Image (cartoon, rainbow, N blue to C red; front, side, top):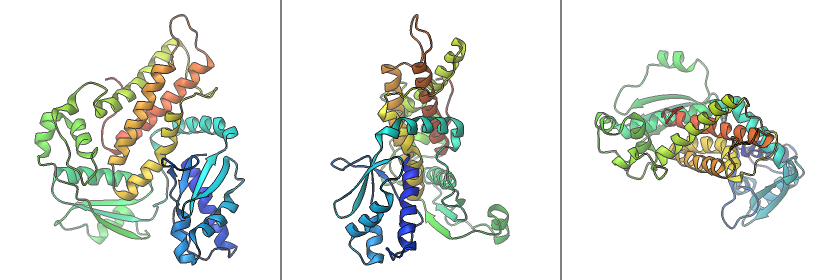
Length: 353
């Protein structure tokens, strides 16, 4: 069960409770699922009961109990606990974990760049405005791509410039759409022009440097972005992607392909794949492409750990086995996530590095 699956399960439980008149509160558009924080319980946590407690005029723990009773027993969920003021904590069913991991690897490999894309924002128009400044323009374009991964329609423009006419809006967005949102994208300025940054760092390194820090932080744009070593997160992410492409090429030369047949003991990498849809959703909601960049670093680290401890390719006189095919499939799935994340940031994913 992925975080997206868990979110849908909890949302369905909320709707059931409302339909049964056990809970009198508006059904939220989405339910946010997060990894359990240090000191928490289980694999994932959800604060929706705290969100619904006020409108329902009930204590949050009572709301959480109503939802727990309707979620408990769902295939893939082993245990549901209530902690603190009313947090729901979920422990996934270990007996179905291997099957879920295999299904996720297959899903990522099949969907490729479309993995994590949903239609939550379908029918919603987002107007993004930004100052005439390079970092603001870059972040606004990435936020637009993030919102589109959630199904939203997006128009981007500089502040102070005339917006599109209604006729143009109908052509670009369609004659029918739902709610409309407007936001100003205004990170701390970069203090340099686009031309100067590209001349010094190149397009991709400049884009990474402008987006990796949070919007309220200054963007460090030094020459360390060009260092070809794993201490440089920008290099690490693209190197990890290039390694997945190299693994595929070499496996084809050896005459075998990736197929997830036996479970691979790589919890960090499996978690990174499972978290990717949630990362896209939260980054879109918060207008924070830096979250995608940090998640890509986590995925790259986990992939390179797998490569070092459980090589996807046979070594020496070894013959390709089911274990090799499974590791290769997992590595290829990680490559799809890395490529998808880089695409959202507007950065190329090179097959050779």
